[in-house]
Length: 223
Image (cartoon, rainbow, N blue to C red; front, side):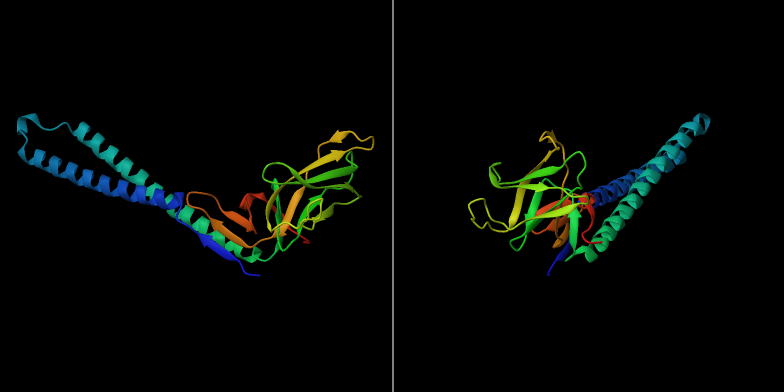
């Protein structure tokens, strides 16, 4: 299975550029200040010497700002390294079946999978697959067991029409033993096909047409 790891220049890059511009500007301002200060010291009236406290305060202010920009620059470098490490860490996931939290499921090669919880208060789960307009494409009622189980969709509608691979909405409603409505959570299982970082965004994991935040991953299916 082919996959990809992609990184783009995002917030870290723009922050680094801003820090560089800030440091360059500060250096120019600081050099200008030193030139003016030196000139003033050379030409000052000995009987009306410059206030040393004021001079010291100005030097301390410049030094403080310079240190802050240097700290921001180093922090930007650390963020860039961390982002690179995240992309590297994502590489082994490509081609693996992963479990993620999402409100859409990924139809890949004509198959999609939801992981349903074990029975408790909720005895049955009504699973609905939805199109982009919220219309029901497929509906199944699943009896929950003593352990979690997977529900698979073959990509067909209720009338038997086969749909193309893609990301489809879904909703899961729980029913208790008396048929009363209960809340139930389900997770999505799919094959990781790529990892990328959109410009200015967080790391994203691709499951075919479905894109989720890296923090939405809940595990590797079957492990």
